[in-house]
Figure 1 (cartoon, rainbow, N blue to C red):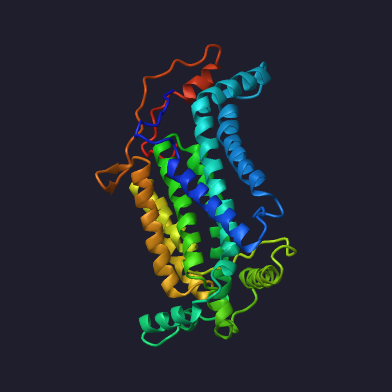
Figure 2: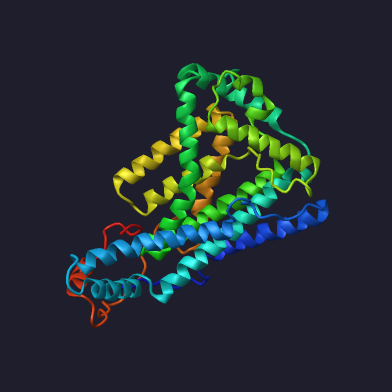
Amino acid sequence: MYTHQTAGRGAPSFALAWLAGLGLAVLTIVFSRLEAIPIQDPDSLIPGYIRFPAIVLGAIALDVVPRTFLGAGRPGAGWARRVRDTFRTVLRERWPLSHWKFALNGVIAWYLCYAAFRNVKSMAPFVHEKIYDDPLADLDKFLFAGHDPAAVLHAWFGTGLAAHFFSAVYIVWIALVPVSIAIALVWTRHTRAGEWYVTAVAVDWALGAVLYVLVPTVGPIYSHSSAFAALPETYVSRLQESMWGDRVAVLADPVGAGTLQTIAAFASLHVGIMMTICLIVELIRLPRWVRVSSWVFLGLTSLATVYLGWHFFIDVIAGAALGAFAVWIAGIATGNRVGLRARLVPDPVTAPVAPASGAHPEALASRSAPLPDHPAAD
């Protein structure tokens, strides 16, 4: 087995992610005091402080359990003992204290940023009451030679099956972010790559929250709803109605509503985070199919956000720029750079560590393979 360590770079692990989270936490407290709005858990059904650690622990189980049973060999005499011994060996080798610290540090920093982001987003309409949808709609029409981008997409793709397809794209994106965080913290053994990605997403949240306060918008589906009247009912349309109900309740009574309002359009963090994913998988050189799939999904996400009315086209452009900047600044902060150019810097690899005595021979053989070619996947 080989162990990976984070090379010294003059800053603690996840330093920028923690800075982004703490900065947003300060904004949350300031806005809460100024506007007399309570700070709330952003996940009312299953609290995020339970859900996200559960995702990480589930990912750890998926990392350890299959290796345990494969290493223990076929059931037979002494199989239970082999499973027990192999489990201990796999857990010790795959999850030394250094990697527990890495994963927990990352998930706590990221959740702090996420929870504060959701609260700042909810408070944005109280802090800055003006709505900028009309100027953005005018800018969209200027970019599209006098046409509404959503109307153009409706004409190109129709308003039937395409609506359900783009709704599915939106659902996949919702699951993609927490799963990708779990992959970056659990399954990678290249700590610089995992730290880079998690930090970049934290920066996405922080920059997005600031833009929501500076340029409050609700998005075309709410400010120009007639343009989307021909779309059929989908999961997304029901979600949009539910979110508007939450916004109305929060604006009427932020204390008694018992929820957060989650509507803000500029910039599109759906696009921003997908741009971050695309650039990270390119820069750490994941397999070609992963890179191609990421760019395709970025394109579909960009189309879906405009088609379904979540965002103006200018929101997509701003989101892409935000996501690219987050990758660059996170690369600088995590030491993944050559000069001012973002570039993955390999973790130093120590000498082989002797396996624990008493480990089952089949389990040891399964761990004698060389390190994977791609640094962020094993």
